[in-house]
Length: 346
Image (tube, rainbow, N blue to C red; front, side, top):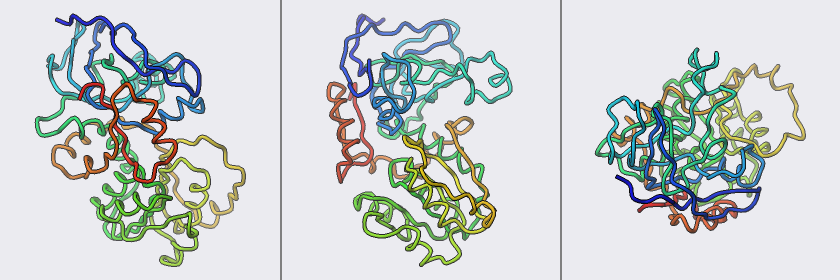
């Protein structure tokens, strides 16, 4: 039985400012689960919400990628969930009533509950979620690994759309947490050679340790000229994971005719110049990708089988009280920063 009635939470009332506030601990209603939060991964979407270029309902508690333990179960909870059980969760859920939800497309639900955007998120001591998006963590999966389940699921869902075959050449733009997971998944799927494109040597060196054949620092050289120098016809598969319009333009330039491209990043700016003629000349297949629906259990299986390097990507840890400093570390692109984790309960 919980005696605590209030908790700390990292909240935004207006763009640009994070406040650590004491708020009531949420009460889980029918079919809802209250989770004690142990790890929260800081994502570029969280930064976009905090700065106002990703839409959200303020005031809101930030965060949507996390792991923890079940603190309380609401009535009518099913699926064998138990108090004290280590879990992770998806970052949102549909209303369950609209046509999109009823036809298995809840990711597009117009009334979707999105943690850290439309409902209070997990940068708090406790978070309340729908039981349908809670996934138990196997005993061999740590909280450090579990906080990244959502990103892994999103990557797996993205590449289910692309015909992956042995011997393909690939390029990933953006060696952040998601981009490095992409690299590992593509290599796991049989990519022969892989190029990682970014701006920080620390991340590019980590990409090489994860199997990248080549690395391009766009602060020193042109991605298009360098990659087409190695692969004159372009690469088979390109993934945009930087959320940068200039990176997106470069993706068009290095993609092989008839190749496939996945647009994964969220953009905080609009493309100022766009030459659509490559659509005619190259006949590319371009896939958008949103969320990890249908891939959460597979992501947990990948974690359980230790097929990805996850913990080694964590470079910085902050207590909940220092959430604003965690965001500063992310936004200022500290050279040795990669996955930044907030620990409400360590």
